[in-house]
Image 1 (tube, one colour):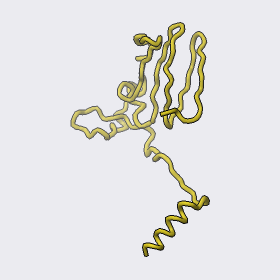
Image 2 (tube, helix red, strand yellow):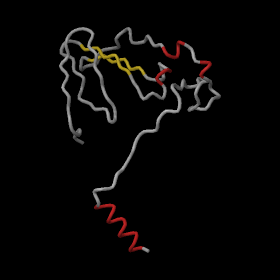
Image 3 (cartoon, rainbow, N blue to C red):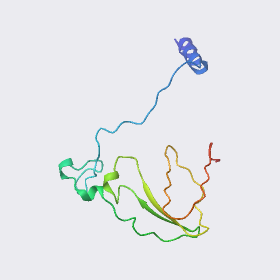
Image 4 (spheres, rainbow, N blue to C red):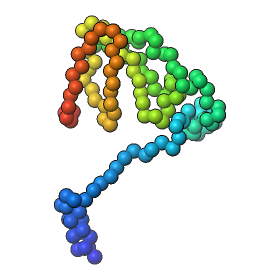
Amino acid sequence: MVYKTVALFVVLLFNKSYVTFASDPDPVQDFCIANAEPASHANQCKNSSLATVEDFVFSGIRVPGKFGPSGLSGVSVNSNVFPGLNTLGMLFVRADFEVGGVNVPHFHPRATEIAFVLEGKILLIRITGFWPK
């Protein structure tokens, strides 16, 4: 029996014709506003009939944040301040740059970054391949 198991393992290990499928689970609902009641379970959603307009509106990015030493001011928007984002896998950032400001090199594993420039010009350099460790 051991030899059959080892033989099967070797065939699967060195055979290039096998197929592997992987994905993230699909959400089972359109939105899940986190229930803010203290007695509720942390992963429990608010009843959809109790959702309000305020759950889907956020105006906290009208004003830029404080500028750091790199000349970047970032205001992060996540599901803690914008409940409508909960379970959507999204995060928004308002980023303001001083003249000569730099957004330090970074990467987003399994994510995409989109930049929308309202005023001025930004030099955006895309790094491809794997980030060095």
